[in-house]
Image 1 (cartoon, rainbow, N blue to C red):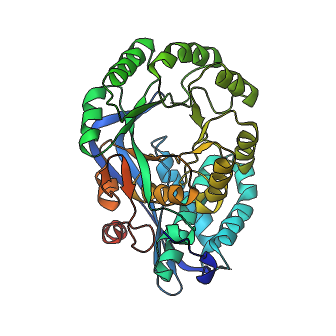
Image 2 (cartoon, rainbow, N blue to C red):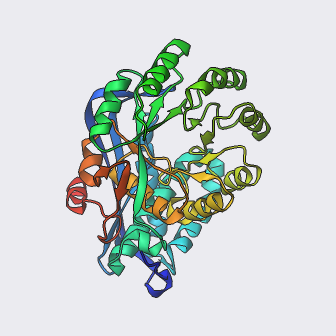
Amino acid sequence: MNVTDASQFDLSVNLSRVEIVLVRAEISAPVRTSFGIMYDRPTLLLRVTDRSGVMGYGEIWCNFPVCGAAHRLKLVETELAPRITAAAFCTPHASYSAMSSQLHVLRLQSGEAGPIAQVIAGLDIAVWDMVARRAGVPVYVLLSAKRTVIPVYASAINPIGVLDAVNEARTRGHRNFKVKIGFGYKTDYENIKIIASNLRDDERFMLDANQAWSPDEAKAAMQWITPFGPNWVEEPMPVDIPPEIWMQLKESTTVPIAGAENFITHGEYDQVIAEKWLDVVQPDIAKWGGFSECLPVAHAVVNAGLTFCPHSLGGGVALAASAHLLAAAGGPGLLECDVNENRLRDAVFSPPVKNGVMTLTAGPGLGVNTELLNEQFD
């Protein structure tokens, strides 16, 4: 595809309205991680309206804790929306910077760096979507993407019924699969053995421990995991473990180490890119940075010879944003596609997957189902 110069478009931001709604979708089976269980699928949606009447849609990460979604909703209503409504900015980057600056002291005073970063990220997604819709082009065009076909993987496969989940994902066109671990040696070993022994020639698998292990436990786990040959092991230790310990773990194994979905500052990304104690870097666009921060990080990751794979475990807007981000980032990374039940996600954004790849449409903005999204606000 031809790369478009985004400067030809009007990138200004002047919002007349910011709306937010929390939707919880019932599920038939819980989604399990090493640190908690999701008994429903929450989606915290933003809708912004430009002074011209054009709307844009965003999403704020809100999976854990259960009460956190309602708290983030109130942060938008009381702190974020009043600051950005009717304020004029020349670009989405400028609006992102302004919101970060204006909420800086509140972030320090409240000790809520994560939730504040998340609401700003969700707003940034909505602003970019609005600007692209106003211009009549996909977001990936504004981001100067060089491709619209992106590789994907089936994610968040539960520790119960692993093979059934893999087979189901295969029927949906997937060729790459990520299994949750961190549930004890016996459970982890059996699940890894099952997926490794049932892979086909053109398939790969990854593992996600969700910060389950101490450094000693992680090093021991990598020893017995290595012979199975996963494509990576994600978050084997808590994110606050010092970088030198992460480097020691990385140097102790041939299996790539992934992480960074829980970073909340640009400095953390700068450090891991410079020191390369992760092989796969995974910002979550709805959790930190939006497009305005995540795209520069993605380019830096790829330019450093690391792999950029955006994290996503939410609704359809967040997934769509991650897809556009990956298309613009380039490199060999894959899009994370949660395969657990989530009716609202699938109804909002679910391009078909074929032979492990997804093709983005040429529709304006994020290419999401705006009719269904508007129903959530009305």
